[in-house]
Picture (tube, rainbow, N blue to C red):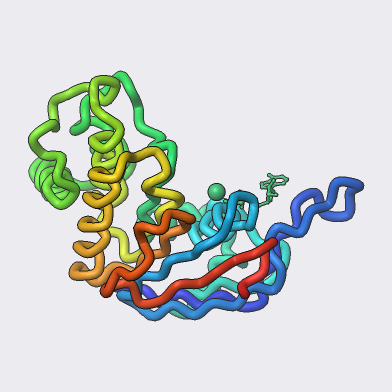
Length: 225
Ligand SMILES: Nc1ncnc2c1ncn2[C@@H]1O[C@H](COP(=O)(O)OP(=O)(O)O)[C@@H](O)[C@H]1O
Ligand SMILES: [Mg+2]
């Protein structure tokens, strides 16, 4: 299952009609075909995280549409938005958002607590995700004892365990050294082979000149340029 993303006339206005009103996204239009890898480049504060949170249905736009395989997630009631998020989207955050006191395995498992699958399928799904992210060898280790790169691979396994069709990565290499950033680049290549639709928000030059990246989009002050 893959997903096409169509973003049309998208606006995000924080504190709308208040004194501190702020236009974070201004009439954004992007079309991403299923299986494409797209890099969104922009300096801090340009609107990258805002854009990813809208595509992931973590928040709602002020105006505009986000069509995922023709379904307009900008207009979805919350219950359907969370269904979409759990089924179709894998998030990889800069800060990893892991549970430090749990093992790698249990962090990945935590994503699946609400899904009704049997124990054997659950184990298999988790193990496949751990292998894809190159972290299976650390599955029993507590997250607080992992290196930065290992934490990130744990976060990648967690993002993959639902078999999402869309992966949203927000500054995935911001806390990593060069070796671990290159590991992420290889995982990105794997996403391409798995036919995932991927958006990476970054200002890391490591994503320049990658042959398997389909497109680079620049965002400045909430506008695509
Ligand atoms: N909840 C919010 N309320 C008000 N302003 C916000 C909120 N979230 C983000 N912003 C502002 O929107 C702009 C874009 O933020 P963000 O999308 O996080 O940019 P980036 O991820 O590119 O650094 C920034 O100026 C930020 O301060
Ligand atoms: Mg950000």
